[in-house]
Amino acid sequence: MSYILVDGKVCDCDAVVTCQVGDPVPLQVKLTNWSKHSVGPFALTMMPYQDYQNGVHNYDLQDAITFVGSNTFHIDTVKPTKDSVYFGALLFLYTGDFYLNIKFHEDNCSRELPLSWLCLPSVHIRATEPVTPAKL
Image (cartoon, rainbow, N blue to C red; front, top):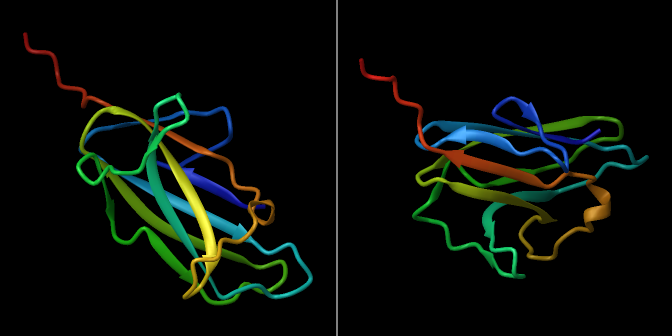
């Protein structure tokens, strides 16, 4: 089974993960090879975007989100029934609703692999204002 954890929570198609602006949000992507053959090499790239709900996706978010580490992970080979797990983190600089577009492509090539191979859910993250203690 493949899955994505955001801030320790498993993402599914209906879930929105809430985090606070300024706090690093841990990401974990686990891939399991259920085929009878080894797969790879390929690369996993995570690209955050905002969906304006009018058919437009804004990927120009360098002022709103940053990755702690790399947003691309190179995967050598995953043997049948074996797993490969990748870790990263996001840092949100502004509030808003964001999504992660996770793409797999052949290593050293821009050719994307079919999404049907992966069965990964969409990732919806809501960045909110940090909670400040009440003053008395």
